[in-house]
Image 1 (cartoon, rainbow, N blue to C red):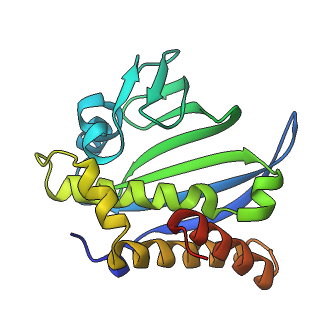
Image 2 (spheres, rainbow, N blue to C red):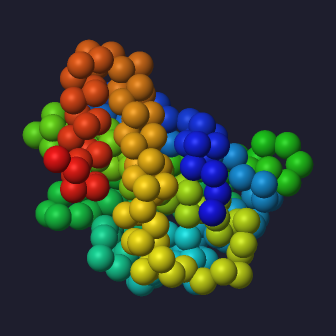
Length: 210
């Protein structure tokens, strides 16, 4: 298992604002540099067989205009694809819609930065949980990506993942992620007490803590 403190500190997290036709939205950005080249990372994030090893099983047509569905999670439509640099898609879950964009940028020899933007309307859920509501999930995804690249042939084991998330080390990872998103929330202009209240609510929702 990758050291969780090092993993959390290796990730950049920022928040911004965007105005959409339907109203104000928040843009969550998360990124990390991985020790692999651009073409390999593109294959990792766009090929169903490899996506399943670090994120979730996915079905559908993984091409521009195609529809996709993650098992037990979000689905949507791939709205653009610029191989091997970027793709964008709708992110539809629980009756709501938001938008994601993934960008890959070479950073030196055999190193590539993965950047994901998630744009969502401000609503009651945002007011209650803040960026961690989706941020913890994306942090877990980037951890899975790091683990896959460290052992590309290892199969994904859902039962082991759930057991780890319920362990003390898994809870520490979620706590560190919650704290990191609270700091990003504060840096974007949220009052510290509000950011930390929302962070605590998110951590409790993920872990069942009182």
